[in-house]
Length: 556
Image (cartoon, rainbow, N blue to C red; front, side, top):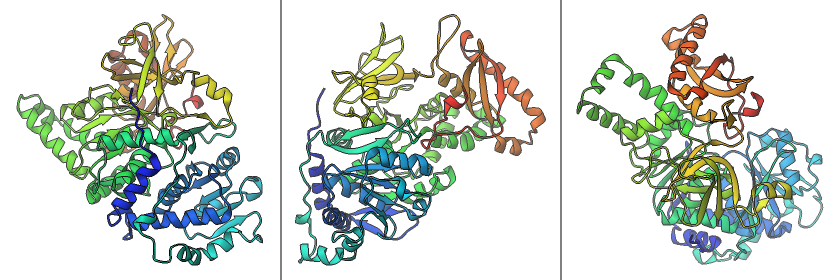
């Protein structure tokens, strides 16, 4: 196991100086482009603001808002100042977000004004000041009459900035502190549920492990283009749509809207990114909406059965899909959740340049990855050089067990929660991931499912519901599904694909018969102990977390 020992803040200082004239940030649909020089200057202004209001290194700054250039600037200004950033998803309700702000002991909150209207300042006693992300207006302050009140500081900030840099702000002025490797850079909450939030403490060393790996792997590079559409408040988007790109001189375009396939494909076509980082849902929707209707037509099925002709058709589909993603990318990295097996197999068959990585917030996030040309189908990549993994199984290569990891990327623990920390992190540094899988002799990981969702059959067999759901989700008129244990058997809860039903003229009266046919087909594909006894239909989408994962516990 190696270590990536570059000082993280020195990496950013050098990047900003070396790429001074290059474009750094833009928001999709807006004309303004920030160069790295302007970006560094805005960071310096925020540093001066922090200094003037008395913010200390290690103090917490909460950040609550949608992806924007200002959001990115506040995040980077906070960690390069030596304070701890607490990114909060705007999807959290006010009660849960207030809980996170209080639990984290944040003293400053940067927030979108529209969100702030639903919050109670009196209920957040640790906060000293609240500032708008849109216009730098002070929205609330504890002691406004003080000399260093935020309102006075902001009013005089331009004058003080000019006094500090009388000849203008230049590359030589970009200097950041050498923070201890074990200092907490990010406090990332895995859930907003009041009373159950776990604040993951990610150190500067944890971030360096991810960032330097991204640099050495050339995931991004000087002058490359990135379309950032994942939530930056999540470790996955944060690391590979922001932290790595800004460390090398990439031009990041921020997509602040909900990433529906139609809107996203239009943005990809315009931006033409050199790397696409996405979650499985994006690829799966494109596959179901655009590819499945094409390859299931009778004439197409006949053509695909003809040798050589099938290769020509697959190449045409591949080229069309590559163009849909902008046509200039090296690969698509899929992470954040398992990729549907049928979708993965099809993309591999047509030689689409994709790979699947694995990580978790507690590792900031990356655990395993391999370039698409080396990618092993059904795997989630090779364990990183600065990490090691083991499987709690008598036969780690063939019998699934819980995946445990250790190394540079592993968190310092959960903030103010020693019991939860002790429950997953051993004294010698091994982190229990809660995922079940196997590990090949050459360190390639294969995930089977979550240990918490695994069902033990009456015959003692381990059932991974995610694997059954992946098969069912590809069947006609199934939008998404959840397999749960009911009594002594399995029930599949299904939210139907009403859009496709309308397109095909299928009525609700026909749905039960079609689902029973799906159940029979499904049971022919799975092991006897994995067979589903019944399908239960629900009229609305499953309730989901802000990460768009189904809240399984609500349906068990």
